[in-house]
Amino acid sequence: MPEEWAIDVKGMTKRFGDLVAVDGIDLQVSPGEICGFLGPNGSGKTTFIRMLCGLLNPDAGSGTCLGYDVISESESIKRQVGYMTQRFSFYEDLSILENLDFVARMYGLENRRQTVRESLEDLGLAGRKNQLAGTLSGGWKQRLALAACMIHEPKLLLLDEPTAGVDPKARRDFWEQIHQLAARGLTVLIATHYMDEAERCHRLAYIGYGKLLVHGTVKEVVEKAHLTTYSVTGPELVDLANELRGLEAVEQAVPFSNSLHVSGGDAKKLEKAIEPYRKEPYHWSPAESGLEDVFIHLMDRSKDNFSK
Image (cartoon, rainbow, N blue to C red):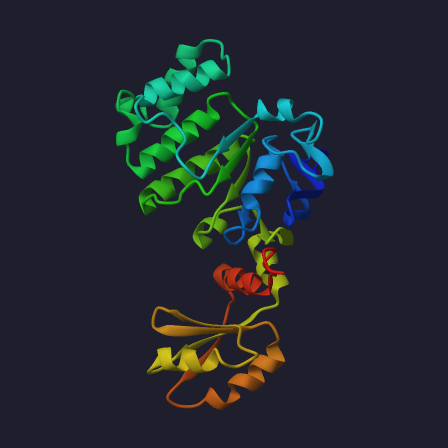
């Protein structure tokens, strides 16, 4: 266990009227760790991130972020955090260079021009520095946003679905940069819906409608779900899937390429339920449950905090 956690909070809670958006979350993240923050839309991920960086005051809870008290020292936290929002939030009628210079002025950085120049070089933006931000593709906007987040050399990056809407090449380049930054000691908390991105994280935290349901490595998260999965091949798999979904023990029946993944949380009940279907023309074989299987399993078992 590290002597100091980059994030160490307990009982973090935020209410909006009768809605409990974040409900007593405990979370610890080590320095230099990439922690993936997973959960369905509306589960409280963004609210939690905003409480960590001092943009929202929690209604309950305590702890530290970068060694500072999350309640009483939020201003100190803000100066050492880079926060990348879901939507592009820079001036589209300014160039890349002008946007970064503006951010550098906001932070009151010394040697501002040199810092901006180095930032352009580090993120591969120098060749496009005079291009208007509004004309950039999704991948280049993402790169500009990351450069702006990093210009004041933060110790913690909070990234809220940063790769939404960008192409696979841009996503891969982005993750390469994130791992390079983490190798230098930067801590990263990243909200994502992409399972391939979740697998790139050192640890995962799954939040379901305000509650933290599971926390650990990819292997630990999959094991904690206690999900049993089979792969099925054969004809008319769509019809088979529709029939299996009507069985109480079957939580998922999802097409994967030319096969069907059938999963359930109770292995014995699942075995009994699928027994009548384990014959020709279908071939059944045990399969490893993946993160996507676990993600859907946890979603199905979470209670929507909007429901009464």
